[in-house]
Length: 168
Image (tube, rainbow, N blue to C red; front, side, top):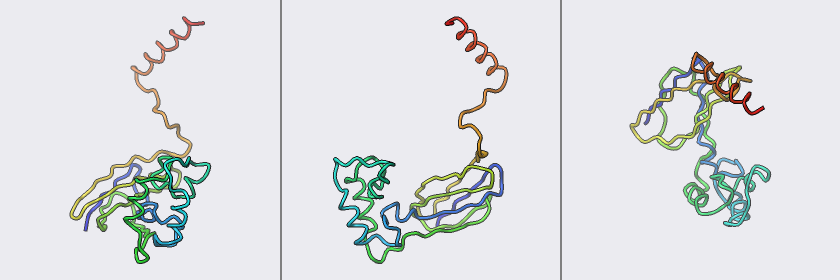
């Protein structure tokens, strides 16, 4: 087993982890990476293909989202290719500011709290490893750039305004 410790500000957000549908290799999301996934993957397999948001990353076949379905995608795909592999494991772990035991492997962490933007992160954890996540959640509608605060910010803002005035 491995341990993750998830802390958040504000506290008491919900912690979820999932296996990302076998890191994205389960293209048709049926719980396994098998023949239907292979057909979709094979359709787009080419270093020349232009994958992107507009075509759903080549129907999901561009697993690493680098704009093409090629060897890096194939390496992920072949790792899970089996009718017996169980993809799509999703676990609700509980509130933040706790520790959780999980299986080693690659996981997708999601931290959710009403009124705040969801936090998502992909991570890989080894057997007997402990990983700490200290997360500051951002309020919905809050700007993504830092606010200018303090005397230094006022001075910089003043210098910027003086500079703009010179160029008028």
